[in-house]
Amino acid sequence: MADAKLNGEIEGTRTRKVALITGITGQDGSYLAELLLEKGYEVHGIIRRASTFNTGRIEHLYADPMSHREGSMHLHYGDMTDSMCLVKIISDVRPTEVYNLAAQSHVKVSFQMAEYTADVDALGTLRLLDAIRTCHLAHKVRFYQASTSELYGLAQEVPQSETTPFYPRSPYGVAKLYAYWIVINYREAYSIFACNGILFNHESPRRGETFVTRKITRAVAKIILGQQKVLELGNLNAKRDWGHAKDYVEAMWLMLQAEKPADYVVATGETHSVREFVVEAFKVVGKTIVWEGSGANEIGKDQATGEVIVKINPKFYRPTEVELLHGNPTKAHTELKWEKKYDFPSLVKEMVESDLELMKKNPIA
Ligand code: NDP
Ligand code: GDR
Image (cartoon, rainbow, N blue to C red):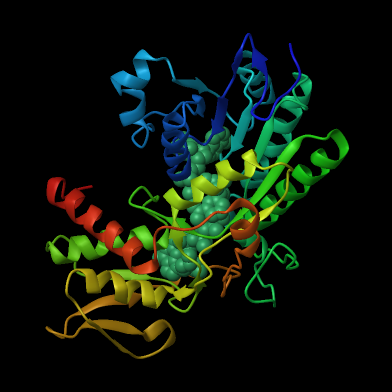
């Protein structure tokens, strides 16, 4: 095999562009697969065996006769808890870029499944890095790690940047902290071109239904169509720096095209509360919310009808909460020339409109 080049190995005269995505069936995996196929990559993804279909977000790519005919998209069964299968997949695929997006990614669920979350999110990252070493590809692969703003947790510094100290507040955040450091350790110890993308919350119409933004936009659609009466939420005061997943997968790719491996914050630089997200989402369908009460007794009424359409249910509170996330993406702007295309209102509008379409077609979705 010839020397490693910018984008990986040379095979004959062609520079190989072969990406392996763990978590390809998730929100980010699906957008990243689209982006890489557009850029001419051969894309391989790891999927889990499930008793129901779990490839809904990538079906359009896999079933696309164009991608299919050209043999650009390949799926492999595997799991981040199974070292042997990771070694086998890396050895068969010989990727030039690996994007590690697989995770038990729900913060609240991580309090109930702490050990499993650590196994997948922390040790899973170690297993993947070791699989690359086992296959003697450490100098030939570029590795992206899906790190997260949840690392900051209780951080006192605002806005948060690459130099802000971490203080994770959930088993998920702690597991991702291990992953963050093992990536840096393998970069320093074995010269792997490995980057942490410290991504702040990013959403889209493909966002999982139990994350707060999608829960809100689905409920707005259902309420306006008469399929649901009330939206129940937990902490309305939490603030997040919400961007669009499509913009963020672009940043992942840019990190792996840089001259040197490094860690980058990807964020919009704006922060909004959950309450503001609710107001913006109802605004898309022409409803104004009037808030009354406070704490667990707070309610949101439809200004036009006086009906209660938002309530607090303490079951959605977390044992420890991350109250304020607000990112500083200056390094990504300057070094990667990354820029977001979506702003907050356009993100919320796209999500509400997409859920309206979905609920009209399929009221039980
Ligand atoms: P999703 O929850 O939508 O997707 C997670 C993916 O991981 C799914 O494909 C899932 O498969 C897969 N997965 C879960 N457990 C395993 C396992 N044991 N073995 C193999 N695959 C597994 O997450 P997102 O797309 O939103 O996020 C992608 C990554 O980025 C995650 O690591 C997340 O923690 C991180 N992140 C996300 C942010 C966000 O705001 N979206 C912000 C910062 C970081 P299946 O479909 O079968 O469940
Ligand atoms: P987060 O996203 O925990 O930031 O993790 P989530 O949308 O779940 O919560 C955001 C904030 O909203 C508050 N909240 C609620 N959350 C949910 N899920 N359901 C509710 O009913 C509700 N009511 C209020 C939460 O308490 C929280 O403060 C996401 C995931 O994608 C992680 O994988 C990723 O690492 C981080 O974003 C960055």
